[in-house]
Image 1 (tube, rainbow, N blue to C red):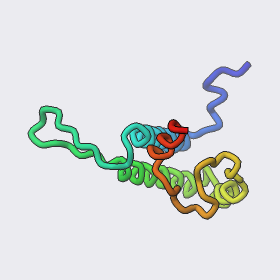
Image 2: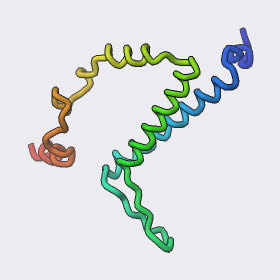
Image 3: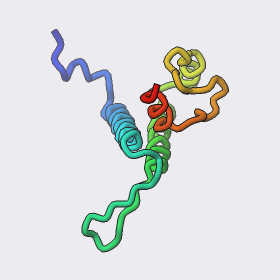
Image 4: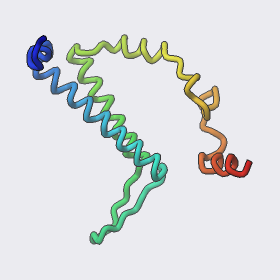
Length: 124
């Protein structure tokens, strides 16, 4: 059985660094999405005994973090670690409709906010 170092010799230090950056950026997207699921897209104002309140904009945080993920992906593609055509082909062949329960077929936003959908469900 090969030890850990032998299994990872196939990656250069530069490749490992690029993959670590992608992993970290994906984790930051997960964190931003989780905060939005808890608090919504609307800005949150926190006043933690600081001289001025801090405003967090969850929508902007997700957008910024996704931009960072795209940059990390581009870096991997430019280095030849990943192939753009394979990424695009994967996007084109995945059918996610079976997993979507609240999305209209045309891609437009849902008609009612989730809070209203939950209330309507509870009443019935």
